[in-house]
Length: 291
Image (cartoon, rainbow, N blue to C red; front, side, top):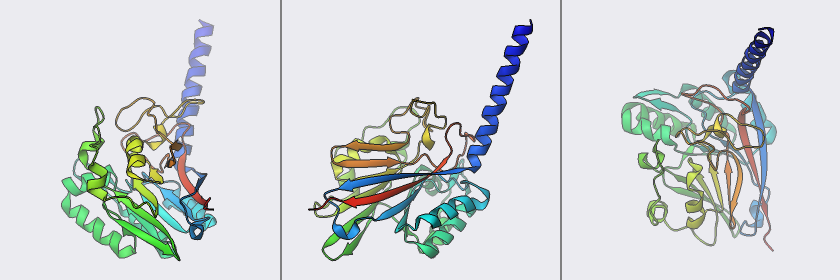
């Protein structure tokens, strides 16, 4: 009997420690840095540094996100890339006030490029009034909203193109994965120019092979919240679309000459905990290997 009591007590202590850690990790932000090299990147953009935000869900890390903002200021990025789900939208209910404050602060200091995630697209479908206000207020901050459009930065003869992909409801199915039609990206975004280095802001990482085939040199994604629970030596445990051990839960991935950086995300929504998986600010530094 004594052994069972001790075992039960240890289990309770372990559960309490895990719960306390999950609460700590919701308010703590880690900075994950990646160096991405490419022969296609012009010398003018050598060292180009991006802070990547994803899955803020109107929450984020730290009181009023001051920890995250301080981390970004220390980095002195050339730009901030927001790879979707800055807002929370579910059942017609929406929240975005905190994310709007963050965008105002960021866009005052840096160029900000923002593509849509499934929560923004859900808000657009289910609550057009909230979407109109969000769109209007985001535009007023000076943030560049990339809704299936591109912007090209030029310096001398070198060019860097940033494209934001909006995929629609069908590509965020809860059960099963929709196969991406062969011409979908080309029809939606146009043809990727062979003379420009292409950064694709694509919220879901599930379609990395398709992004690479389209011509993305670097894809920036989120969506999987780092797998919510991370176990040592394993991938993230599950994704928001209820897949166990999703292949692209967080980290850096390569396919041919294409690279994808997946953010573990900054916030939560329906599943409001993160275990072994602190909020993550991703930093990508580009390195030119042009001869």
